[in-house]
Image (tube, rainbow, N blue to C red; front, side):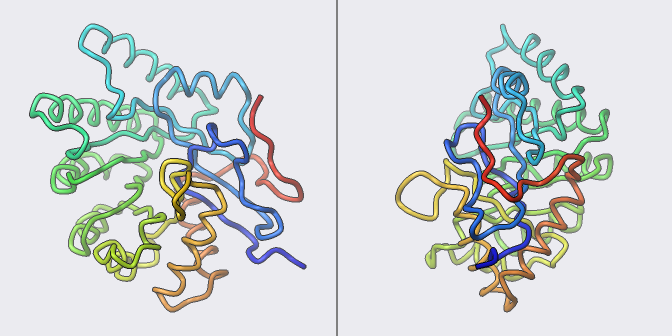
Amino acid sequence: MPPALDLVFDSHVHADVIDTPAPSLERVAEYRAIVPGITPAATDALLTQTPPAHWSVCAAVHPWYLPDDQHAAAELEALESLARDPRVAGVGETGLDHLWLKSDDDRARAARWFEDHLALAAALEKPCVVHCVRAHADCVAILRRWAPKLPGVIVHAFAGSVDEARAYERLGVVLGFGPAVLRPASRRVRAAAIAVPDHQLVVETDAPYMSATDGPGRPDDVLAVIAELARLRGTTDAELARLTAANAARLFPLSGPAASGRRPTAPR
């Protein structure tokens, strides 16, 4: 039986911490993925292991793991060095998180680091992957200054409203939709997933940290996300997969081959 989909591009998957970092090849002929950075140390370790060619690796300091003032300069220097590496395709995930970061001081520090990441991405002409939780107004305000200077921006795991999606669309920002769209109770996310224009849509899993089931997320979850988005938008799985892969590849073109013909193995 031929695979159900010719090409799938997961725009946000932590494949470096998953034992089986690709969907079943019985269902997908070719697979590509953006693997975000969390800390410079983790990205450096991944590059040392030689990641698969179908991964677009990014570098960042995630807003949950920002260093204290004593270590900030060294961490920023490590990030800048990694981001210049030609094997690093983009900067992120970086951004704002008003759910996790409660105090004004922590939120201000996250905003400063966010702008540092955006400035680095602009200087290197690399796209940026953005983490934004309950902070869309602040995120839009910052991106209004930076998005025109960047080759592309993805706000991953978008959970905002239709109006917030339109604010990003005016800046040319692409939105990643993941397993949240599978939950009927997530009415706001599902409404935004229907409303966004074709050119603004990419799919993701955020596996293993988000999931289509009760357990850890898996790369196969991207197929359920594609199927539900296709149903919501009145199209086919194949067309939705083609569209979102083209959108992701526009920001993160890959020079290496996609995974095809065999299941990719985890880096050693």
